[in-house]
Image 1 (cartoon, one colour):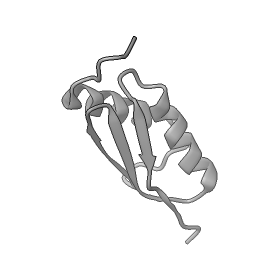
Image 2 (spheres, rainbow, N blue to C red; image 1 turned 120 degrees about the vertical axis):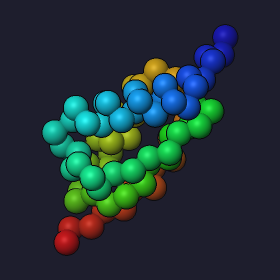
Image 3 (cartoon, rainbow, N blue to C red; image 1 turned 180 degrees about the vertical axis):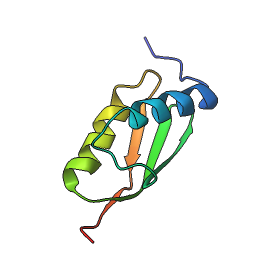
Image 4 (cartoon, rainbow, N blue to C red; image 1 turned 135 degrees about the vertical axis):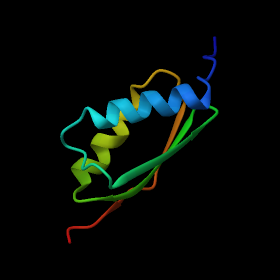
Length: 76
């Protein structure tokens, strides 16, 4: 049984909300694109923990079928 992907607008809203609620993800440094159940994470974070945290948060959003984590880690 396959899951029907959430429409992009709904998925965009859900991903945005879950990221905004997490205090470990710096605001304004993470961008993402959604479409057909796929989420692409982009931007710069300060640690590999933040990179993994962002991916795990998004993984639990209903309608997400695939994640492309393109976040870069920069300590500066």
